[in-house]
Picture 1 (tube, rainbow, N blue to C red):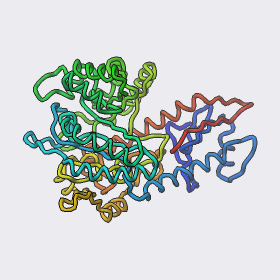
Picture 2 (picture 1 turned 135 degrees about the vertical axis):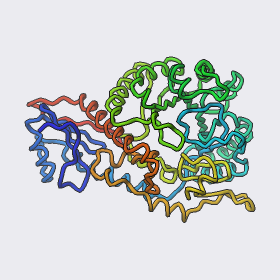
Picture 3 (picture 1 turned 90 degrees about the horizontal axis):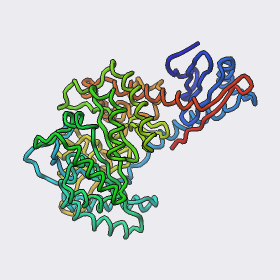
Picture 4 (picture 1 turned 30 degrees about the vertical axis):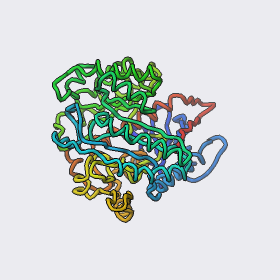
Length: 459
């Protein structure tokens, strides 16, 4: 039997999948991939099913153990107590770009920023947890707007962060996600202020000008971003890149990757399909008709990135990790937004949104100066996480964001997913399938050696 997709083996309590061609079959459980010559594949499955171990058919135990292990890892992460190990700061909602797909509400006149007391109080919680687990104090300056526009606030908080890390005898790690559009002087400040910089750029000027135009009308931000990247590299700062892919750019991934790698020189590039939201036009979204084109272009871009010594990747499904949606309460992230509030969702960018969506998980107590986590509500939200029923027999059921951020499994909401459909699920499943098949090409089988295995590191 030849199949064009992986299917879950019936009769197993754990997730073990099979894929067939005329020459060989693949047996896969997260962490273990086995390739079997076609003439032996059915016997191999029979042994797998009957728990019969045979020296002639090795790695049966590995598949069974991997299938059990991924479920245990997943459940362990889901049930773990909320103990944030990363402080993510949405400093303000100010931005100098006007991206066509931005999910952040950007009121023009709203210059409100996070307060120093809120940042300090939240940082103390995270630092104590990091010290307990012997991890660096990780602080991420991210979304909601362009964090570099709040450079003065960053300068004010940095001495406190350094002091806090020293107090707990742990390293300090600082990351910033920026659009890279800034003066030369600010770029040099950037290079002195962070350990890792993520630059957002959607590709060469014709693409960037359409998808990420400047608010002042300038349509050639690329030259400025390229200058920022050069300054960072000259200072020895590591650089990552972020690319948002839309329906019109899904087939241009190799071209985009070549530009980004040549001019920004990132160690890795995170290529993400556009998120559905209230403001993005439907024409930006990927459709069923674009999935095959997207996947083919994705792997071409992977090859281009590898030639530059970089990586082209997506965060939606990671074969080396047991994970679920992007929810902060599962990722152990304390995400602050203006209004001195912590939010469970990274798409929430201010306290009013958090309150309306019932996704506020903590706030600064103005009387005590202590940042108070709402552990009762956190437990409530975690208990209501609902993996879609369609995930039950999916290849990446334990290694996928479950349609997040287009839908919300945390609140079982489909309002946003109705706009974007289940395209993200289909896309991630297709990419993961192709990635596993490509990994299997390194395994050689023959009549004399009918079975070969590949271990995939899993955390």
